[in-house]
Image (cartoon, rainbow, N blue to C red; front, top):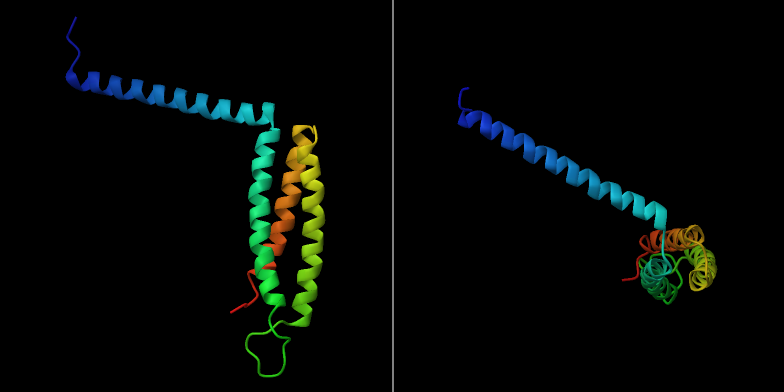
Length: 140
């Protein structure tokens, strides 16, 4: 029998490390996927998500209020509150406020993970719509 060369030993080691890497990566990612699907969204996670959504809502609402406090638009004004934009802000804010109220109630109750996920998703969507609208207004 001939002695294995140093080169074949290096290739075997590289192959072994590759196999271990693939095994570990697939195990970790597989477990994460299984856990998120099997366990779903917990009440604690949903509450944390809602705190973030409410923080985004507060920031968007602050911009909307600053816009509302601008003088009404007149000819030649560069920074002013347009009546149409104000109506849109009021409408989107009312919808977001309602969705947030309902989502908070669901998150506080003993809901299933699917109900929690739907509530958080609805709240995120409603606040995203308000944020998108407030990102277009000029307040300074």
